[in-house]
Every structure is written in structure tokens, then in C-alpha cells.
Length: 326
Ligand code: PBG
Image 1 (cartoon, helix red, strand yellow):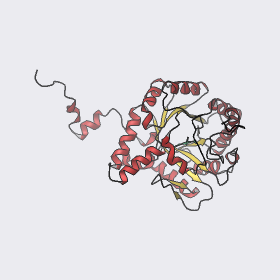
Image 2 (tube, helix red, strand yellow):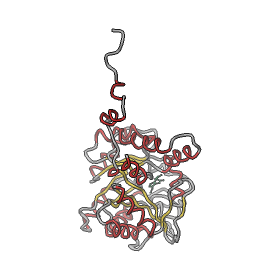
Image 3 (cartoon, protein in one colour):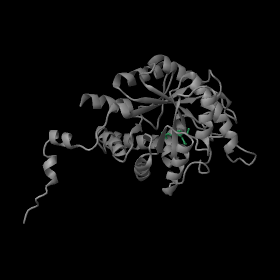
Image 4 (cartoon, protein in one colour):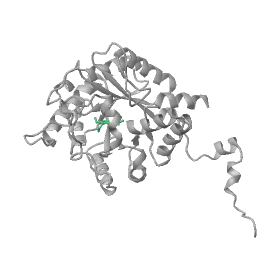
């Protein structure tokens, strides 16, 4: 036999053949749009390191949410930037605080047509920028932080969030939040656990997006990039504490972790294509070095192929528009 009998190229001959035999395809419904709202803005404020992404006003946030519904996007993840910060992040508990108000405003706009998710974390609300409160030595105090997370969670559920996203990587956070929600009667408010969240250099642009006050890093609470096994432990703990969905974050440099988690998780798995992943593709595309639309599509498809059921991406609405066209 001088020629191959098996010719994988047969299935690549035409666009229709490739479409028919594709193992994975993207759909708007599995995309989640992260969105920022900043207290006191009268005009949306562009984020320089994330071209195309803004800090929203109430009006533009509602419009972005309505547009996401039109495009068939699955969900929105809200982050709030308060006007005033303190050491305990107390603005996070105010029912009329920026994030809780945004949850209410977005729910009023979209009802149940879009899954409304919100960030349960203190880093946007503290004047030191850490995801929790500090002890006398400046170390992030796990259990003191849990008390605040529990109250934040109830405030966000009261405001109408369908899903809460605790992103602070405190041990036990899913359990205390679940308990607090049950005690408050919010039995149907779901929790998406940022289960395997790594300390990443690629969060850089997000720090601009939320005007972060952080000096130093989050390495005493977020995971070490060197670790793979540990991600499974984090996911198992969150499942035992009642997580309804789990997340791996970032996505691109952690696709092995995502594949591991997708293999073992009995609940839906999300991946967060973070700010630095967005910024890199936008920057290369702006220079004409890569084809923007092709690179964006390929990057999200890669995350899906690795096993994510849902993808948080700043391109959610734009990508959903492209998927509708094609
Ligand atoms: C913390 C939080 C961060 C992101 C989401 N939630 C920042 C961090 O952990 O430093 C990053 C998201 C992104 O980079 O797109 N509340």
C-alpha cells in the first residue's frame, strides 16, 4: 500500500463537511458577559487596557443587558465600583450600594430572560484592595471575611441576583454563603464557585477596570500557577459545601486544569476568559498581527473544547452577534 487508506482530510474538503463533522460548536446561550458599573458616573468610562470595555453608568449597563438578551447571551456577571472605600468594604453591604442597586436595575430590565450573576468579593470595596479584611499583621483574615461574604451574599440575593459568584478564594466561602442563603429563605439562589482561581499576572487590566487599590498580590489566597492536583481538591471542597456550578479561572493558561475539572465535575463547569486574555488579543489585532474575529472565536472554542460548559468572556455579546450571523 503506497497511499494512505485513512484520509482525515476527506472530512475537511468543504465548509459544509467541516460544519457537519465539527465536534464542538459555540452558542450564545453558553456565554456570560462580565460587566462593570461605577458609582457616580454620568458617562461610560472607557478602560484603556481593555479597548471596547467600559465602566458603565446605570443607563448604559441596562442597555448592555438588554442587548445581551436580544443576542441570546446566557448570562451577565456584575462587578461594582463604589465611590467610597474603607478597610472592611462596608459599601458592599448597603442595599442601595452600587452593586446591589445594579443587580436590581438589571433585573428590572431583563427579568428572567438573562441569568443575572454578581461578584461576591471585597476587593472592589476595600481601600487596601484585598479580597478580604486584614488582621493586625496585614494578613487576609479568612474567617472574619467569611462573615462579611455571608452578609454580602444575602444582600445580593435580596437585590435579585439569580446566581452569586464568590471570587475571593477564602476557605469555606461556599458553605457559609449557602447557609446564609438558606437561613434568609433564598433557597433558589444558585452559587457559582470560583473553585480553581489562580493568582495570575493576566488580571492586570481588571485592576484598572475596577480601579483597584491593591499593592502587592493575592498569593496567600489565590492558587499557585504551579499546581494542578490542588484544583481538584478546591473543586471537591466547593461541591461538598454546596456549589451549584464551578469555575476555572483564568482560562487560556489553565486549559489542563479545565480539562481535569470537566472530567470529574458532576455540575456545570465555567471558565473565565479574563481581562489579560482579552487585552492580548485586542492589542495584537489592533496592530494587525492577528485576525481579530478569527482569534476571538478560536480562543473561546478552545475553552469549550477543553471542557467548559459556559464561558465568561468580555466578547460575549459581540461573539453572540457573529454566531447569529453565521
Ligand atoms: C476579584 C476578581 C478579579 C477578577 C474577577 N474577580 C481580580 C483578581 O482576582 O485580582 C479578574 C477578572 C479579569 O481579570 O477579567 N473580585
